[in-house]
Length: 175
Image 1 (cartoon, one colour):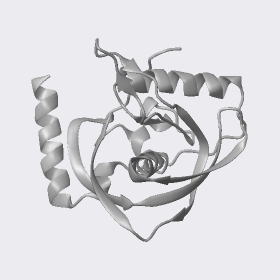
Image 2 (image 1 turned 120 degrees about the horizontal axis):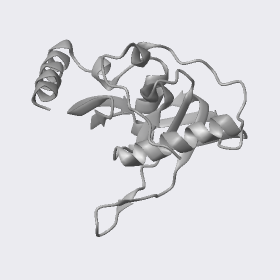
Image 3 (image 1 turned 30 degrees about the horizontal axis):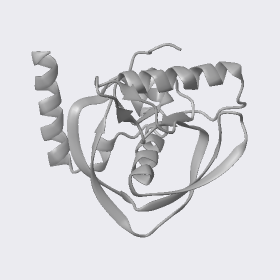
Image 4 (image 1 turned 90 degrees about the horizontal axis):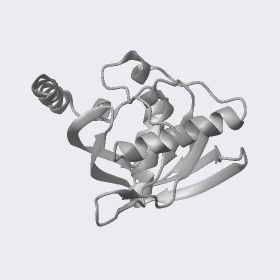
């Protein structure tokens, strides 16, 4: 497995709508394995293919990770989503603080659906469906947005987004 480069805002690939995957094969499984390794390395809980420059409808999530006594990430329950699609969402909304590997060291409150039902292909290419709520629902919606060229900063007010982008610019200048 390889750790790949995570593309950061404002890279154009992050604003592009990703294309549907035709089949799950060994090359796609390798991509998903590399994505998972990249996500763990960057200390993230989810990663969408556009974030590593691949404009395909693939994402990986592991929100159940833990840290050992040395601060190393321990895999929890990695999940692979190929061509994921929300087929139902609750009317109830929740608000939570989100961050993104493509918008480093910045966070903002984002409103999302409290529950979502998602249809997708798994690591082996088998059709699956999941009813997600709480944190998993938020992570899935965040990552699915990436597949449609949407960043979490697109879901906050213009004023908050401008303030966040100024902080991001300052952070980059200091790094």
